[in-house]
Structure formats: C-alpha cells, structure tokens
Image (cartoon, rainbow, N blue to C red; front, side, top):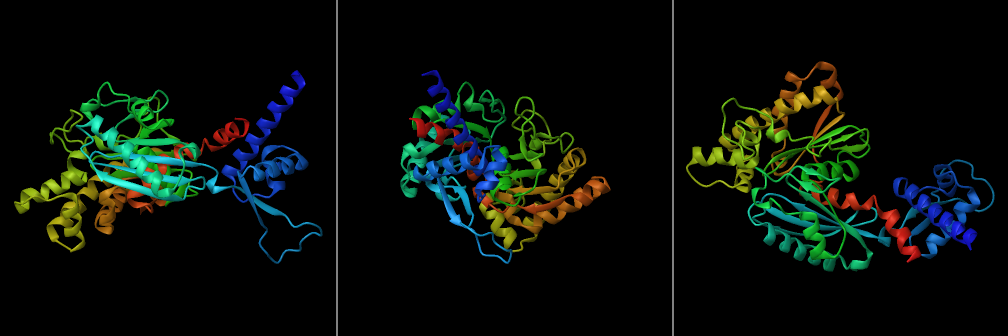
Length: 397
C-alpha cells in the first residue's frame, strides 16, 4: 500500500515537472523535456502521452528544414494545449475597471470595460467587476471550472505576499477592505492581487514590448503614475510591495499637495489628469484626458507643450531609476503614452541629460505594445504561472 502511494506521488510530481517545463518552454521536443526535467526519455514519452489523452498537451510535427533528419519516427514539438485552462485579469484604475480572459498561451479571448468611480465607491466597484468578469467569460465561452483564477491589479501599493493594500492617501475609501477576499466571495474563484503598474510590467514583459528582456522598467501614466520593475527576468516588489512608487517622488519644491499628503509629487504635474487640468485653466473650458489627447493629435500648441513638459518631468524622475538599476528597456504605458513622440522625445532627452553615459547607452525608451490591455493581460499572467499545479490537481480529482 505504501509503495503504491509513493509511486502515485512520484508520477504526479513528474507530470507536474513536465507541465512546468512546457509552460516555460512551449514547442519543446521530448528530448528537450527530458533534458529540462532530468527525467528519462521513456518516462517523458509516457507522461506526454497521458497528458495528451487528458487534453492538457498537444503535439505537432517538426517543421521541415535543411538539416539531415535521422531515420525512424520524426520528432514532435510538444506544448501545453491553450484551451486546457484559462485565467481572468482585472484592472482597477482610478476611473475604470477592465476584465479580460486569456487562454494558457496568454492569448486574449474577450474583455469587458466600464468607467467607474473606483476611488470613492469600493463596494459598487467590486460588484461591477463581478459583472464584467461574468460578461467576459460568456463572450469567451469559457466554463468557470476551467478557470485557474483571477489576477487583480489595483492602483495602490500592495504587499502581494500578505494581500495588504496600503489605501491611505491613495484609495482613502478602501481602508479596512480586503479587495482580494471581496472578489473571491463574489466570484467563487481564487484571486491574486497586485499593484497595477506591476501587472502592467508583467504584461509587457510576457506578451509585449519587453518580451525577452530581463531588466526593464514600466512606467504607467494613467490617472496616477506608477512604475513596475522586472529585474533578472522576475518582478521586483521590494520588502513590503511598495517598490516603484515613482508618482510620489518630489518633482516641484513647494508644489501642489498630492493625495498622498506630500507636496510637489510627480503625479501632481505629469499625470494625464494633472496635464488636462493645466489646459482647463488656460483654455477656460473643461478638458478631459480624452480631449487632451485629441488636441495633441491635432497638433494644438498648448496641448503639445503641456504633454512635452510632462514628458520632461517624467524623464527627470526616470533618469534616477536608470542610474540606479541600469535597465535595458524603459516602457511607457498608460493613457498618456498614446501621445507618442510628443511625450517620448522630451522624456528621452531628459534621461540623456540626467543619467550617466553608460546607463544611457544601455537603455531604450519605447511606447508599450499592449496599450490599454497591458494591465489586464499582466493580471491574468499572475495566474497562468500557476497553471501546471491547477492542471495537476485536476488530473487527480
């Protein structure tokens, strides 16, 4: 009896190792999987066949090339089946909520979006998020029992290890609320919570402009300003999850009071809302962020000057990050990123002026490739990394 239990445990562990290898290395041959896992080639073949029968992996024939091919059966490429499992991403901005569904390869299948007063209405925002997730799952035609869980990005400092949200001054109405627990109770699915800039960084790293880059910085210029870090190929959060609070670096001496309680934070001069507010004052009319971007694209001189000044201010702050971390890539995301070179050119110039020459020579600055979906895809990616364990549990259920 004991030996049978031990054998079953070993087999389950080996299945898990195979799935983990395929998650990190899709399109591997069986020999590749054996090398990556340390298992024998016959063991890998048996496990791959079992997983294929269960619909968890699929195989395809090797592509033709000019290299001589050994006689016998041609090798096959093995990957996890994209429809073996799904993950949901939730992006809570200050003024919107977006939900998205991804398959196991990270391909987006459906999303749902709504404006929302997130800062001041936590209960209503969480209820709305539940409805958006349900809408996205219906659109994607994904059954709940095939969903690994929900990744949740929130615009506040978060210690993801304890799921603690530091709401004071950032999301004042959310004090005493555990957003991850609240979403779990509404959805009946496991929820993993993370800062919105961190999930944006993860999204661009896995699926966008930062793919294949081990050291990158993601700057989110949205209702607030956040910074997500990928260092050595992995997210970096700091001791208590507050690494990267770029928006609350002092930018203007004796400037406006920020919602965090300090004066002159970068967020007060360079966030899209702050820039739109400058135009409201100069034009004498309401200017939304959308209207600001319309004016920039139309070449309005005042709008372009306001955005360029914001780009220079962000560049001054990012230059310090470039000096300290020496990243290969700086990715600019969020709503203001769609201003393009009007924003990016002065941002690059500021980095060149203020960072040291070797760090400047090593870094590229580019607009994000995922646009408004970076955060929701990154939030889903938080769960995709857990897919092998979820699939292993499904096999023994």
